[in-house]
Image (cartoon, rainbow, N blue to C red; front, top):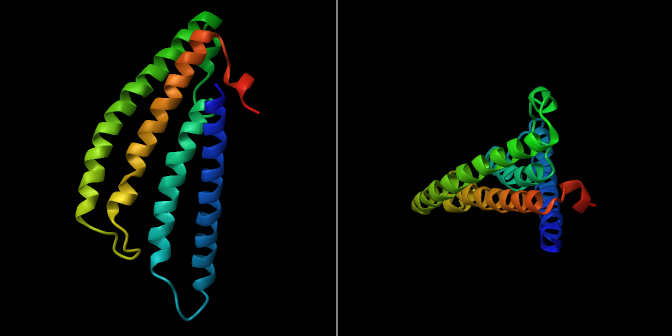
Length: 159
């Protein structure tokens, strides 16, 4: 699954870049509080950067099994039942992601009608984060299911 590793690295770079830009805008926003002028677009841009950072980083967290979960229940399951449980969870995430994709496309279409107040970009660019998140979650759920079927673990692939 070389393409999955390439996708992981690409998403890591994009998420890191978005986070650095987000941090820069927040620092600018803080510094400008002590000056006689300010930029009104920083708060809005921060929100949009945060949304896109989450849309790109959440599938990576799913891939690496880094979401917060209560593992007390998982500890009492046998290895076979744990695999079944995790597969069911990923199938549920897959079903939810398909629903999110369909609704996200509708949401995206709604954004073509207006633009953001201070940044001035079409809201469809901002709303595109929802279908993007859905597609990435679908891809990573499929990767997980294939890995389970082939007996691979994410730790074996990640570098």
